[in-house]
Image (cartoon, rainbow, N blue to C red; front, side, top):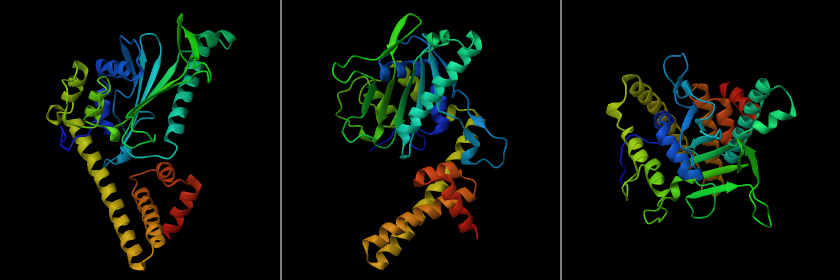
Length: 308
């Protein structure tokens, strides 16, 4: 399918931070995804690209602990996380981010109010939105929104903050691969088209039009263009290395003439690819071990063996 912006992906880490550094875009996105009456947002994290002081640039030179953290005018906070590659336990990780943020907020309150039971009344909700390029749910719905409800009556569990009742938990997921041009979801469909880099089938609202203008590479600063080019080159090298390893493993499996050999070859090819990328400092051991479904200690043990 035709893309609106060849060579530029809205889900690229650097590009996404440019998009969500605009409060109007972020506010409209949160309103549409979580159905919240937000009027203004403040970007607490993710508005700047963090660069580690190392040369040459690598994929690990650009980082944030979470992608975006925004605070609404009523104190509610929203984590926006983008995941372009399928990760085992991604929902667990998103939940951990949310819980960690609640705990950080409580510690700040305790420093201001003192360590008393009064601290808890000032806790504001923290919600999460995930934009994912792979499927985590088995149905055909491209958008999911979850909250905590009573099993029998469906009553929403809420907390009181600033005199308002708010959902205790809200987590939303936008699964880009489930996009369908025939979708009748008028609210979320334009966001699916935007983040999926698909042609718009309806006139986008102001916030989405603004976000789309940020994908004009020629309008970027020289620094942003340099960082994007360097990171994209590293990512392409990593993908080429992995594709080569998988193709080699597939050929070996076919030569053996047994399906088990093919599957084993794929697994071994993936392992060797991640080992090489970590040795080249393109990826971290933590990231590689998570992708392979093993512990960091197990991965580093393989790394030592591979180095011999």
